[in-house]
Length: 172
Image (cartoon, rainbow, N blue to C red; front, side):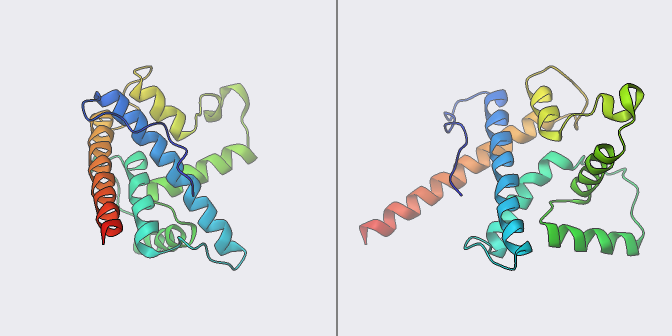
């Protein structure tokens, strides 16, 4: 899948710039997993549908959905098994992402008008952008922006290592 993300940030970029870049990478991961899922649904297989590549994109999305608070209620084993099966089948990153998708589908089918929970509902990517840009606060875990910036720094290092590997391969 072609990379449509914004230009790679400078090494000295601030946390907001890095977090916004990482959010765009996450959105691309969601699109990429959608392409793989669509191929699987039709009985085909995308050439990039490998466990390592899929896991890279699923792990990237986890940062958007998981609260990291540790005080979440555990799921009963049978429910946890169903969530694990759905996550594997539908290439979802976490139980939280499953909940988000279920909530979106429910609100789409059962709108409650201006007084219902869908009146203020935003897609998780829009909420994340608002949080990063400072228009909202507290929608995500307290270190959300710095966490995404850290993930962006790790991604930049990974890209640099891949670039070095490619250039060394061309020299041989």
